[in-house]
Image (cartoon, one colour):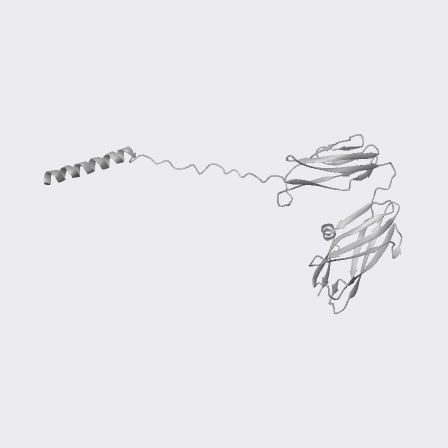
Length: 249
């Protein structure tokens, strides 16, 4: 019995040694290389939008802008647009800057491509000497700009508008409230001055049941006698220091 037990102990030792040898006991264990750079793939462009007023006269220039957007609709920085014109005899465009040069009367489709995604705008080139410049908003005032409503209340909107062509023909402004309700007023003639440089005023009536909170300008639309239109939206109004909110308490 004792002899048999000794043999058993020897066999166990042999087996343990063999296993250690097979597993490479004492050898270096390889570790993963963590020094390799991690490659982050940037999100792709989902859509492209073109900004700029697509109207000019023969001999004039204008610059279009291309904004690439991701899948969430957010602008993407650092992307470059390539521009082309489908009718260079009407309007040429610089391939890298988007600068358009009016060559002949007519229309031309201008295309911007960013990372394989494209957008197009139709540019109209008018005859030399045609008024293609829309009116310009110089100032904007709301009186009053804060209301504590126990009854309906009038707010007078006044804006100074200039025009270098045939003269402004209308002034239109719209506010949108916290619940998406809107209030709009429009003027068809200046209250003082002239259509080339005058003050345009209109009145909005805020009802007593209006939702409290900020009522924000959607846009100011200016139109001239040659039907040139300029929409001054809230981002531009803010950037230029114009008021954008009527507050209702």
